[in-house]
Image 1: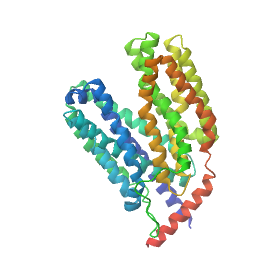
Image 2: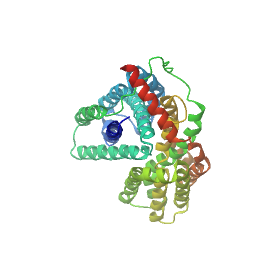
Image 3: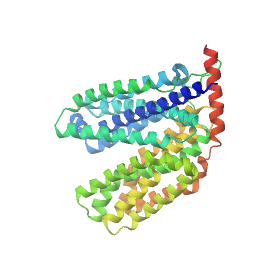
Image 4: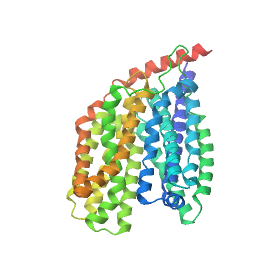
Length: 407
């Protein structure tokens, strides 16, 4: 291999990294655009708060049901083709919830919305892991940081649209078309990975491998703490500490920003200290943050605690996906397994916190969050997935052999 080939290979990987980062940003922007218009959607569909809560469980149900299909789709159409199609389905599905006239159609729309979200999520994470392996350095944290940045962009545009009183149907049609075009352009630069001609297709539905279950348990702890803090931090400050609504809402925004910033800079920390040590130290920070929330006598102390939770769990999900992608012969299947577990955690966390609070108090609920955060300290070693350099070399050789077979 000549030096020109090496330079060309590095340049192609650099472009692939930026392309998949753009895909993550688009994916997050859809979520942010939807979340800000939920009040409009609720009024349009004429559903109560309880019915809305039920409907909002359907995206996670749809994602969990459809994510195992992502591996078979990638095998059939190639990684780039699968991502291009699945991402387009996800961006276009943004228009469905705002069209729903009642709770039944809203549940169906949100099921489809979640299914396309989950499949495209698996496809883009699998490609992100492949780029990370070939670059031989951590990039998954910054990719998820780009997702958070996209969610902030989408929520900002949605907030503006809501402030102007625009119809969410028009807003989401415009947003869906723009994001579909941007997503299609971004997908042009991702790696075009294809299965070997003699490789058996993965089953359309399969239980996740045992390795994914173990890694998924770490993801479960991180996402539970994240979801609980994101959804309940403002309520906690208002109800437990008598904070004004404005300051309580600001705590949620600060938590989201902490997560985004920590993810964007997390790769440098992971490359320096490794995934296991990073998650273990993050678990200590999140545990300390949870303890601060539980004992907080003043709003400032609780806000600092929520900030520590966000800082501590920020890189858990990206590292769980990266570990899953290197844990066995079928990265998409392993990533789908971890994604299913984390989506489930995100689904049950808000309701679990509310259920415990109804029986006891929000303080006890965040005691549970603190215990799960400590689980990151105890279980971080499962993210030790072997030597990435060896896997990178093997992956490069396999890719080169596949390319030669197509010539």
